[in-house]
Length: 302
Image (cartoon, rainbow, N blue to C red; front, side, top):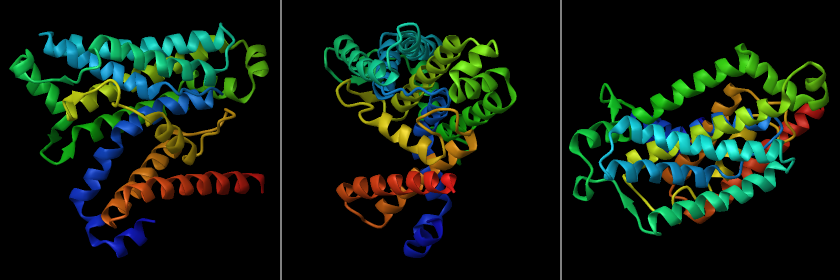
């Protein structure tokens, strides 16, 4: 695909464009890291778009209210983790399907965001009360570049993906995630606390969705509860599944997830460079996702 795009539009291979692709997929990628844990455990989280919005808006409102940067960011991440905790508890101890639980939380989190903002946009700016010494580092994590080259959002994505890969491949928690997703009964017989393992995956997912929302607010310091993060959950799930994770659980790798995120990002960027209509872009990406998953399933059956 990259070769085709490079031939069709020489701009594609320019360093600036490739870095731009990296920045564009970073927030999606951070959430996909969390989704990998959830899907491997045999669950799914449909509330992450609303969690993204709620956490980002909470952090933005606190900064405008005069809070320091670290407490504001910490609060936003805790909000995201809290949504994940509710999802996990209801899906495990409540014995409700995670599809239904997180679909409900999608509306709840979006509703809370609308309530706390009164449906009005939140703009992080000195004119609305934010302190200059807080704004500068806040904008840097969203808009800044390391050595004036590498986008900070991309740095966050790479670090979190590496940490996720380590947790998944080299820790007891990673082993438990695979075991639970592979067979709940076998995991219980092995002495694994199945419910707690799944809850931890949901909390991690919520925290990463919250972090992504904060970075998104830092990049474009304005958001509205009714629009921010809409549909993100579908992109995240699609990227993770394209990367090899299975909705049935027990399968997936962090390397595959990163590749899935890059495939979605490169495809979107290429379609824009080729001047394809946004309406056709959505259709084409949907077809590619179906084909990718279909080919993967077919190859595994062989």
